[in-house]
Length: 119
Image (cartoon, rainbow, N blue to C red; front, side, top):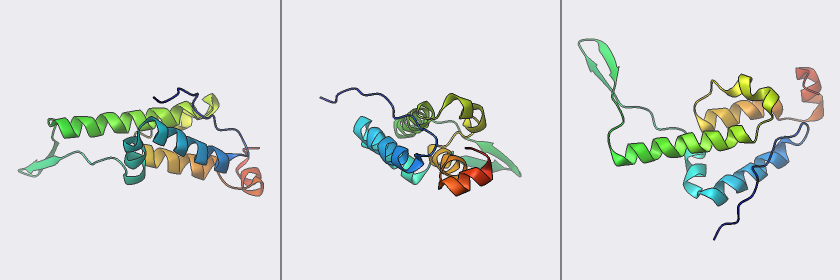
């Protein structure tokens, strides 16, 4: 039985610790979520007919499971981000890209953050 715990919240100046804790948290919930984060989202299938590219809908159970895991991984990461950054990151729909953006904007050492005007 897995004990429920709160999602680790990112605090200014402690990105590296948060990164380790969110990784452990996601792996504890479901290791497949972390694999989705590590490998990125599966690209939607497309078909081209007469020069027009059409995105094919998700139809197989495997595709639906993969999409559900991607949404859950992204949502879990968003829950660990402070509210003031939600608008900045909300447009990123891929968990792997979301974590990369968080690291780029909120990660780094104190000197880097001062240059970015974060703290």
